[in-house]
Length: 68
Image (cartoon, rainbow, N blue to C red; front, side, top):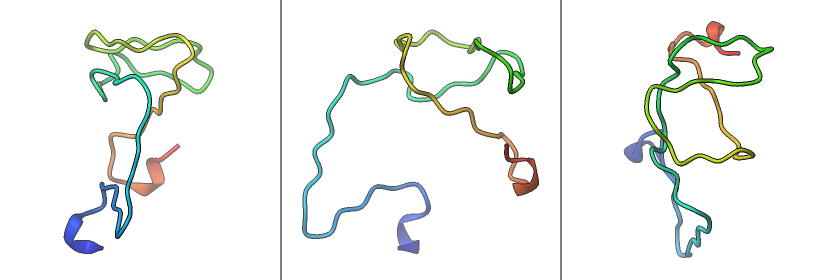
């Protein structure tokens, strides 16, 4: 559905129920770079994330060859 862009959740003739604790902020930036062996990260702003929450660290580049 190109008219909505590539960041959407769409439902056609249906409904969606989302459950869980709202996380704020929903995204932030790393304070420093990390490597694949890191066991902790530091972010630039305060969050309400808890130990055990699952997160994704994404590339800041638009170059698909730099995705890890």
